[in-house]
Length: 318
Image (cartoon, rainbow, N blue to C red; front, side, top):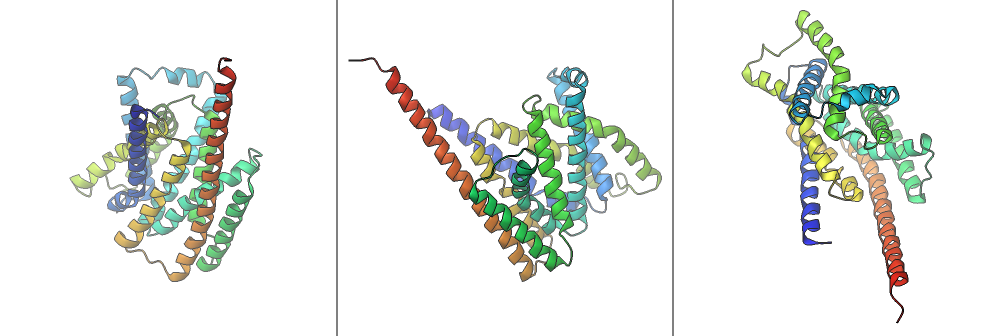
């Protein structure tokens, strides 16, 4: 790898770490928005994000992609379904944080890689390697254990993992047809009419806090667009510069920080039995990471051997 290539990779890793760091710190932001409820926060998140992203695309003169999207009903339907899934994920997550269940939210994002692998089998008919099967089985065992410990299934965690993993599956189907900003704009644009109506209903009922909790509270709600779009743009910048394996390892930064924020800064309680359940999940993630690293190493070796063989074939005869 050249010096410039190494520099780009390092920059990409920094962007990725910062993106996941910001996602990991989000419990503090949503906790600071109290007494706003989850529905009010969702409306502001959607509306300020679509305004921010739409303005950016207008400046860059890239709004024309919306005409192409409308002209392709199947792609538009996929975007609409993705928007519903991400809105569901946002609502569950915010509701969990403001109601004092940020630890369960963190568990959801620990479970997400395992659920993603499981969806690959069920939906895409992918074949798992043995260690992946073991990881999924251990993850399922963790869910059973935590269900017994909670007295019910960890619905918040399961809801977050399922909604985000399915959202990721749909984004995979869309492929590279849209940039990160274009995708986020389209998704929030689909949600914007419902969000606007919901905000009006909440305002009429007197259930909004936008103008009642002081200028700082109002400013924090307005910043919902930056808080939503900022990490996504950093992630997109990272994904173009670093290998997928690096992104896969960085993704654990967010739930670790979410858990630390919940326990150390938001004073949520984690009994010893709950730590055991999280520990079982972490064992599954370690197994999945080992398998990912092994697979990446084998792929690199295969590419190196192929390149070496090609070089030998291309060499002139003496």
